[in-house]
Amino acid sequence: MILVTGATGTVGREVVTQLLAAGHPVRGMTRNPSQAKMDARVEVVKGDFAAPETLKKAVEGVERVFSLTFGPQTGTHERELARAAKKAGVRHIVKLGAMGGDGETRNTIRKWHDEGEQEIKGAGVAWTMLRPGRFMSNALQWRESISRQGKVFSNYGEGKLPSVHPRDIAAVAVRALTTHGHEGKTYHLTGPEALSIGDEVAILSNVLGRRIEYVPISDEAARKEMERAGMPPFLIDALLPFAAFVRSGKAAEVLPTVEEVTGRPALRFVDWAKEHAESFQ
Ligand SMILES: NC(=O)c1ccc[n+]([C@@H]2O[C@H](COP(=O)([O-])OP(=O)(O)OC[C@H]3O[C@@H](n4cnc5c(N)ncnc54)[C@H](OP(=O)(O)O)[C@@H]3O)[C@@H](O)[C@H]2O)c1
Image (cartoon, rainbow, N blue to C red):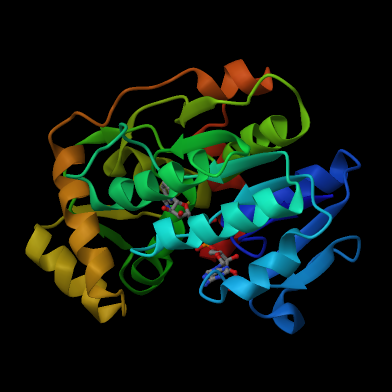
């Protein structure tokens, strides 16, 4: 049995789908089983990283775990999960983290994930760390401004970055969970091409067959927009320095990891855009 946490989210749903397609038994964790809408083959378990006793139940009888959590409590969440997993006899934990180096403290999101990674590494269970860059699916956040104004606003300027398709992240996770040789490995994951937000907008515009304008904005304007969207202040403070990093041009490196692990080329932004065209109608 493989436990997938974050099973109702962007990456977790893909992990579940691909594990089922490969014939593996899956337990999917969610805080709200009645609203989870998971495949009937999934054994749904109610679990909350903020309520550690629920994690003990979630890992009972499980061999492998996909760990996905987020925020300032990431270290605590993954300590509780990894300890429960060790006690239950789990043999391997695959963690979804974020791009960046070991011990990186300047990038807040990387720092949270670094704490989670350290807790998992200290628990005495074999591990694999996945560190993806920006998800292509973040483009779904543009739906409102596209539909209302035909515009996309971003503080990433003209900086390029190789966004990664969530299905590719899931494909690497599934390889790590179900095949040998991934224990003790850290995989940095990107898409196959470095694009600016303006480039992605042009591709989306072409796929949708409608004019969409890219409008670069300041950090201050981006902060106001994120506040308006109800984003918590700790997340806004973590995201603004990342935008500065992208603008500096240092986020553009394309890595071959997806293809090396899965044996097929990483998916392109145009692939993602075609699959999600309906979401923008
Ligand atoms: N977006 C990016 O560009 C990007 C880039 C690199 C790394 N990442 C990393 O990707 C992760 C987010 O992945 P995602 O986009 O697939 O997630 P998502 O779509 O936002 O879904 C979040 C998932 O976490 C679950 N969850 C939330 N709070 C929980 C709690 N207290 N206990 C148990 N489960 C909880 C939710 O399940 P229920 O609501 O059903 O309980 C849901 O399945 C984060 O760790 C982030 O740092 C994101």
